[in-house]
Amino acid sequence: VQLVESGGALVQPGGSLRLSCAASGFPFRDYAMLWYRQISGKGREWVGTITSDGRTANYAPSVTKGRFFISRDNAKNSVYLQMNSLEPEDTAVYYCYVSSPLSTWGQGTQVIVSS
Image 1: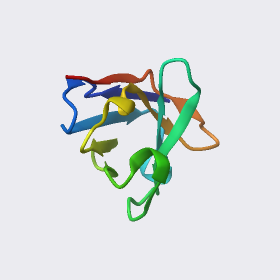
Image 2: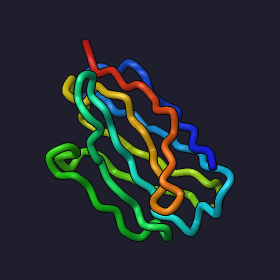
Image 3: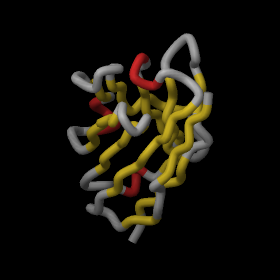
Image 4: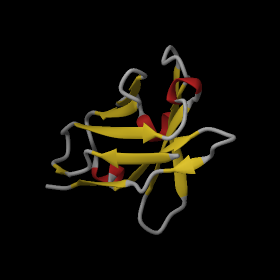
């Protein structure tokens, strides 16, 4: 099981970024996928979850504030996190995670929101 995130970058406040997570080694279309983030000095916090069929996504409202959206492409074994109206407080390492019982993390991708 392998998850590889990409797309992290330095972006100005108010900007947008799309993170990707490429999955391999398991039947991707059968698993819900999650995004988490970890702000320096803090524990990982849940950002959101998308169901295996991609029809439903749930978000942590205090984190996403209606600005983040999760999607997936089961044909490409990939899940995405679209982040809009980014704030300095969104600076973190972002991780994708495959649900139980695989329970595997990617290596993370760094997002820095700064002018």
